Each structure stands twice: as structure tokens, then as C-alpha cells.
Image (tube, rainbow, N blue to C red; front, top):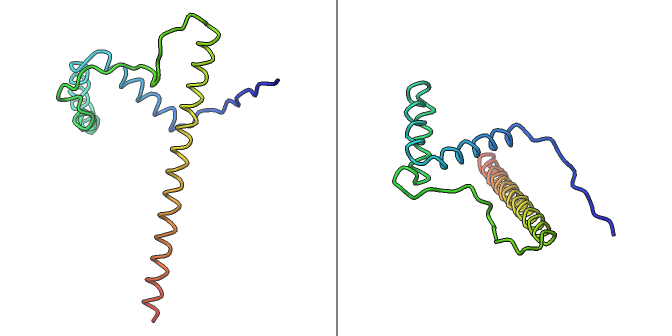
Length: 133
């Protein structure tokens, strides 16, 4: 029995930016609403669009109005069974399933984009046919 090893690909710039933003969000969440307010005020003082973006994010995500403290926990967590081999297998399987789910969501988004583009191209062809007639 062979086990396939995953291929490590270098992170894209967008993934790096997303990772930095997620880590920043989690760091601020760990410190509560005052940290978000300080970040927003400093954003307005030094670069006003950043402060405006933070304010918009706080309102959109309901962090402004006391939705409670969020924790940066894995999506699926379960207590340890005491069997370290099984726990490692379970954690690896759940991570793989989360990765596959994310890839599937990305695939669906690309599929929707392709469908929208095909519909738009069909609309433009009909429109061009009407103007030619």
C-alpha cells in the first residue's frame, strides 16, 4: 500500500494577502471590540480609506454591535479519543475534506462564471443580429 504525498505549491500573492488579513482579523478578534476600534481610529488617522474599510467590515460582519467574541478555531473540532494515531488520522482526513470542499466551491464559482459568460455572449450575438437587420 502506498500513500500519495501531497505536492506543495508556492502560495500566490492573493493567498498570502488573504492569509495576512485572516491572521490580522483573528488577532484583533482575540483582543475584542476595543482593538477593532483602535485599529479603525488609527486607520482614519494615518490612511483614511483603511479606516473606512475597517469600519465597513466591522458593520458588515456585525463586530460593531456586539455579536460576541469570535474565536479562531478549526471548523470541525472534537475532543481527543486518547488514541493519538486515530486523532492524527481524523485531523488529516478533516483537513483534506475541508480542502476538497474549498476546491469544489472554487470550481462551482468558475462554472457559474463560464455560464454567465456564455449567456452574455449569446445575448450580444442576438443584439448584433438585431442591429444588422
